[in-house]
Image (cartoon, rainbow, N blue to C red; front, side, top):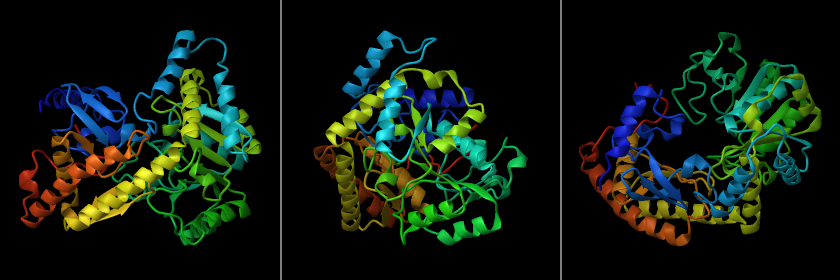
Length: 437
């Protein structure tokens, strides 16, 4: 397999683009340093072709969770092509944003108003701004990963490890105003006493959290969070950027019995086209009129058109049921093959977002890197997690596991012989944020 153009271009990119990519999760060092194809020429369904025309099957992040329907879905693409031909922006507004707002409010009947952005991080920052405008209180209690904005990274001003347990370790608050110290306070999922302590010791105006991700809620955790928010007149924001549209058509909070004040959507709502939205109770969203929140490209037409086509297709095909079924199959097969090959690992995540961690202490990351390396040799883009899509059929997954069985066997044998580092053809992958140049 010829695979030089992508890695070479990546090394060039790191010299002229800070970090090489706009997205930490797409850095080649996160997967397979010096060997990852890095760039794609074409993507369709779950098939990806790199710059050297190598063909891979994507059993990894699927555009970092953006493509529930698979890459370049025909129906979504057609909807986008239609509005491209008609014009994507003008002095006037596009009617699709009203149609989309009506659809989102049908899915979240508790909500009364909608706002748009074009990325999850943007939408979350807007939601926090509006929640603060409503509550007149700066301090935010949070659980989970919520993007790159100052309000969130401020958590690491007080303790540079505050965010380590919220998905990405090693995030430094460089450039975040020191005046924000103490305004973002973390609590751990399923640990209500931590949140209760924060509320007791601080004047908190907003709670923001992911409804579910790696762990299922226990002991009425989500209901207790909502109760705390209600009793203290705290704005409750549910971040559905990563989890939304996978367990059901809409937000996971709809299946978990909670009713937030704001729910934020992005990623899979538009199947690869930039789009984000949040729905909100009217009395809170009214405060958006008091704060200047405005951007030209939040009014373009492609995002709403793509979202309408995506959401309608997810409803028509009952896509979340497929994601759950295939994701559970992946979790079960990982566990089965790991056991058969005497490989120590931990399987986690909701079914549409299955995750595997190799359990070898300080060597775990090297083992994962070797797994990615060997799967790539079999033409699979593979990683510790899979964002399941509609195009991941049972047949596709069965073929994938034929290769996984082989690779797991090799991993187990070479772990026992202490050969993992000898077999790696490049450096060990990164586990979090690191400066690249």
